[in-house]
View 1 (spheres, rainbow, N blue to C red):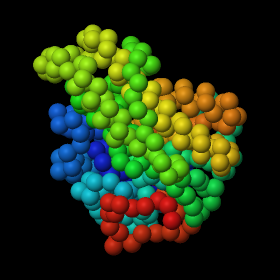
View 2: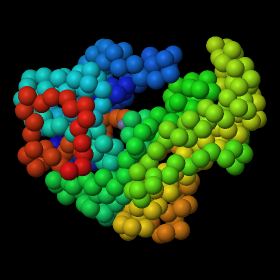
View 3: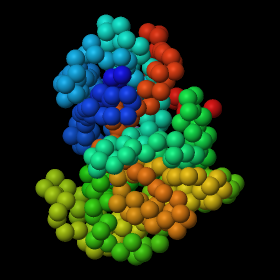
View 4: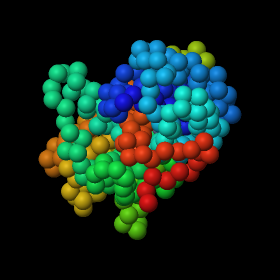
Length: 367
Ligand code: KG4
Ligand code: ZN
């Protein structure tokens, strides 16, 4: 069965066509980074306006790339939430209209569930490319799933992907998401938006142990995360030690190209921030693994693209004999292939959403 996925929860308009929920025939993503760059973050009103402009061409491109006629699909999966209301509404309403005109069932998907599905989806994709037999997705479970993006930092325990899947929330951020911390630190150092990829690249030139930044302590013993403290610590460090250098970087910002040499203490601060943030993620994931004994660790979301995170998780969990899986960057960040993959088993189970489906900004994954 062919399924169309539609994703518009934040600043990416995306559509994808999958065969049998596992084989990606197309995966088209229209990013709005250029629109939001000058504001240093996503501006919700601009995001929804651009989704409106992009949704039709992006969905058409997904059909074209898949070489599939619209009438050939057997169902549509769309992100219902969580996300920005104006952005979600564009995808949800377009999906409803398309399901009505094509007379195919529609199913609502939680964006976070999509991020979890992006990992097994990647596994199947890379195995097909290498011509090796497909891993049965069941073999990955029970799994600890870490979702780390600009809007979310959550750790879920997933016993199996059997429908209906139960997601148990093991830990979540109590304030900023990890990606948000990367973006805010990049903003205060005038490094541009989104901050994660720039920090990932520039940190290679710094000493990750040069600056001692505080690691947030969650005193009630829960496996929750907190990233606002480290962001404030970076701000204080700049104010005390690097204000002149950072002001100079700000004044050159318009002509700055990020290949310019920055002062060495700035590289050191960037590398130290990244190391500390990644260590906080690894520490909680590692403690959760000790308690729950998962068969694998699945990490996804934009921050899962981070080079240090990948090295740290691979090396740290290799010692515990637990395999770690990441999606490739194109499936780590927001995309619609993961939404189609998560929607497929629901459609197969006859779980359909009617035309009364509405966006849900705070949609929860766990029970
Ligand atoms: O999953 P995503 O595309 O959108 C959300 O659902 O938020 O994630 C975007 C986030 C941004 O905060 C961005 O700075 C971060 O992922 N990011 C990274 C890297 N690439 C993207 N953070 C750290 N290192 C990276 N290489
Ligand atoms: Zn996301």
